[in-house]
Picture (cartoon, rainbow, N blue to C red):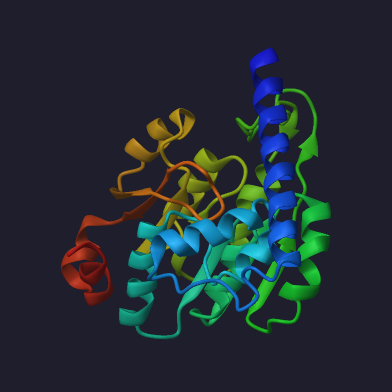
Length: 254
């Protein structure tokens, strides 16, 4: 418990310090012309550090909160994928806005009501985005638990099953919220035959067993992540048959 508290404290201190630096740079006119192009990786990443833990600020960088290598590959997947493209997302934020520029239908579920209220004015202005706000149910012995610290007595069953409100197969499913092991299990059955699942922070130990046992092929993309001072990993999961049958998937992994 002490270790968790120290980690949370260190993260809060880092975020506060970086935001202070960002305000100072802004007052001096640094970055006034906007972020560098994403193709200038290190420059874009350095600029992004001042936007840490601010989804709307991250969205102005023109990126989701995944590893840069994953962003590049998934962007390429979109350019090769025929429309219409349907997306379901566990966990809203900068990725929702980025995806809305590339897909025809976005369904995003958020468990945190306060964060959803922060995002709502922006997301409700995008006609292709439908936001579901589904908080967990408090109670001991949850049927669908989350491994996130502080979520021990919360049940995320309704959150996980929100995807069932979307009819038909889904081309891209993002797993980047709570109860990710359960989200992955649910997502697999809703994925289009040649679709992909984007699973963020996939190197975390508590996710490895679920990913290894899901029956899908995993492609790992590790490296720099916008706003983070350390590398992380985003994985793309897909059926082995998809790589043989569709140009979009072949282009992602060639």
